[in-house]
Image 1 (cartoon, rainbow, N blue to C red):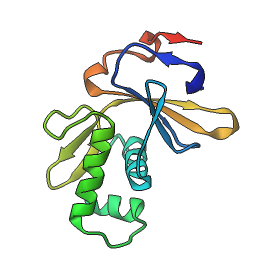
Image 2 (cartoon, one colour):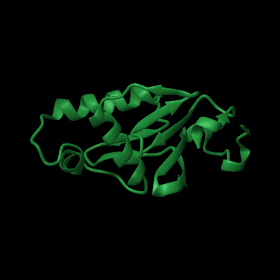
Image 3 (cartoon, rainbow, N blue to C red):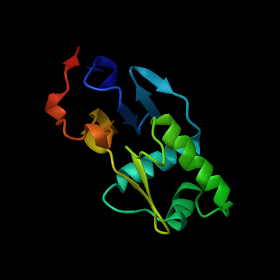
Image 4 (cartoon, helix red, strand yellow):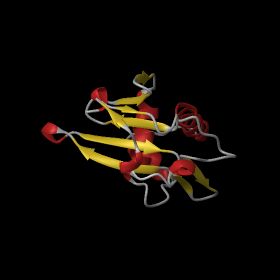
Length: 137
């Protein structure tokens, strides 16, 4: 589990723990709003395709009508948590007029009890394989 491993290959590594609903970087839990966590989770799970604004609205806000600015703000918060930006995307890229896509490297690990844990690495570090990380512990 992530609490017993230390990733030292890059500062652009995050653990996304779905069971505990936590985003972890350098051993610290990053504070995130529930909708921001849900948005990151959805983009990671659907990383092989562009997710439209309409689908984000339907799945993150359960179809509740929200203004465009609320979604834009949530995307901005997700990028901030991941140290990302719209201009130099390393995790979340905007596909203009289509939606958003997670472009970072994702390594999924199943946990005892069926929980899912994702190791997220920035697109700029994507050349590193999962075995290239030094784990201590």
